[in-house]
Image (cartoon, rainbow, N blue to C red; front, side, top):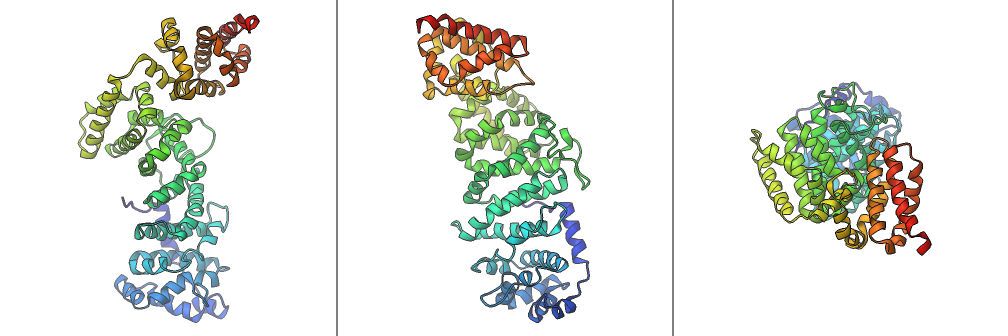
Length: 475
């Protein structure tokens, strides 16, 4: 799953490596110690083989250089006021743990390996400041190493991950796609274990929201609210809606796929908060490459496998089976893609064979978006199913109707009209259950919509209120 580092980050690191640092002056000024300087010079600007040999011959010394010790400050703590040295050390530290994995192993055995680094994540709120960016790059590499090196959650990672995720989220929501790319790839490197995915999900407002906004932009479904447009001066790849490059799209899809290995934890809320099934269905229609199609299908398979009851009905409502049939007719060559396509098609075929008209209606309501499908205007459907609609899953469907009606639907007013129609039918068929609907706020909202600007909304809300008034004097 290893990916090439983002271009902007590589360029920044190369520029810093090339800068001359007045090391001797830094020692005289007390910014670093003689011991720090000796260790730095022994591994700086030397061949990789020599660097590895030097580090492995003195692992405790290089661990102390970066993480400090009981009586010794780390080089970063000593030089914290020298921006040039801090930047240089952050780049060098990453080079050292990448070239010599034994140093990474030694660091994570240190009591507090991240302590000298974490404060630099908060060095400034300026997205152009290299120090938090370089810090996050080093920490992402070291924390990722720590996650894979231990079979159990480590306290050091539990402390560092929330801070790291929150900083990376500022990059993921930046309007510059070069920075977005760095943030998203950082997420991907960290989502290697169950507990790191759980922490990511616990901070979903910061971590997940910008990813979904990027996907909505790519799908052409995101409202233009001025955030995270994907525009960039740092080499974004053009071609998708909203200027989202293929590389950024792939990396965002990769992160969501990794997250869905915790499908039981995240599935229902991904649908409830982000309408993930509708979004992924639209992205499947637009997917420009097999590698993005593969991730879309694999993610849907993960979600459906652990949330069949709640998510398969939505998939049928948004016509995913027909889209999968269309995909199967294309000349696809990726074996993993074909396996997931076949598995998804089989799963949905088995589900649709047992589906009733009630199931179709329930799926539509649970999708959060209504259309004038046949059940809404069919009196027989309401006579046969009104009681089940109110009782199924502890009243989940009328609660969902209340949620749908609570929104303004400025771009699709027919949704409000259809919901008012449904409420009216429920009152007509089961007037004795009016109190249940009123407690959900449905009566008040329907009455409010009698003043809506849209004629169809006014008409359907008037009809629904009429059903309530019919029984007012009998109550």
